[in-house]
Length: 158
Image (cartoon, rainbow, N blue to C red):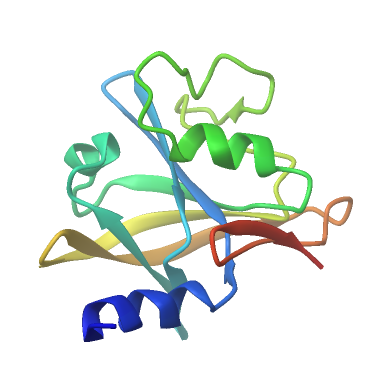
């Protein structure tokens, strides 16, 4: 097995929390499933998220732009699948999962947590961009406290 394949296998064996990043750009709504998101700092509160440059949402990501990081609960596997699909006929927003803020930006109100963020910086690296996100409002959902995880190509629940 080559080192590249070993690297992929090593990372596939880690369990990651599943998130959906959502935003709006000139009235067009966007959402993408992300498993490469982590905290960066507690003070100031900030996150890192990695987005593939080939993703439709990528073109909407600019410094100063607002978005939501929706930390999925164990009951949201279906919307994660929808937002990770490349199928152009599969609409991410033709369902009752979404709510909208006063600026018509979509968020998933049944998520474990909803974190409003502003993009503070973008670092390009190979096939992805690393977003540095400044955390604003955090909404916790006590009704859905269990996270949705992804490991070795499968969803896991605690």
